[in-house]
Amino acid sequence: MKLTPDRKYIYELTIKVRDYEIDAEGIVNNAVYLNYMEHTRHEFCQQAGLSFREMCARKIYPVLRSAQIEYLHPLTLGDTAVSRLGMMRRGPLFVFIQDIYLPDGTPVARADISVATLEDGRLTRGDTLAEAFKDYL
Image 1 (cartoon, rainbow, N blue to C red):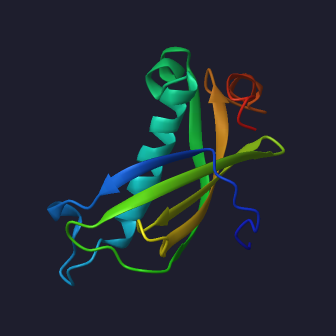
Image 2: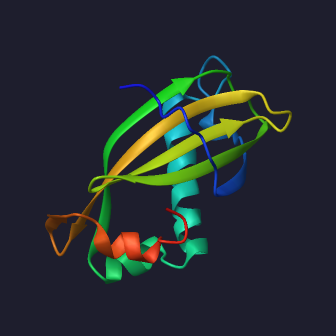
């Protein structure tokens, strides 16, 4: 699976590397980039009007189906970066286009994150979320 070539963004979040995110080599551990991207998705959803807390209260659970990521440039302690997010639907899945950049535009990581939707414990087409995020799709 190739990363989505069309990378249009609808949201961005500034992040700062913290000391506990660094591995023995002095760079951000690879798994932390996925945490940055998840945090960006959560912040986007809240800003768009449907927080994860509200989703859970309504028994709507977006669950990770797949994550494809390319690591392009390491982050180190104290670095500031910009996490950018785009969003589209691919059938019943929501695909988040998520990239991280240094402030000077240097690409750090690129990812396509696919999310399926469970409602009341059952896999759905995600129509409830599609309605909530229609202005962004």
